[in-house]
Amino acid sequence: MAFGKYFTEHPASVDETYAEHFRVATSCAGSLAIAAGAALVHAVVPALCEKTASRRIKALHARVTSGARAETPDVMNAA
Image (tube, rainbow, N blue to C red; front, side, top):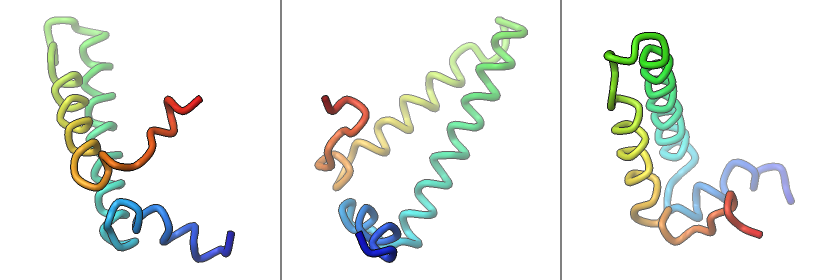
């Protein structure tokens, strides 16, 4: 694979430019970081952040499985 394809092939498969894909991916990373932080707070004090992590994860799942992303192969569950 040509080196440039590492930066363009996958974004194109979900109908995005590299810059658009970068923004989406960093936004997803931020959401996951917040969910992880909320889960950690909940682990220490169970009465806090009871549904924060699960709500964020559900919203993120809906976001990444819609549009062109819904049509891409699921590499995590591919056998």
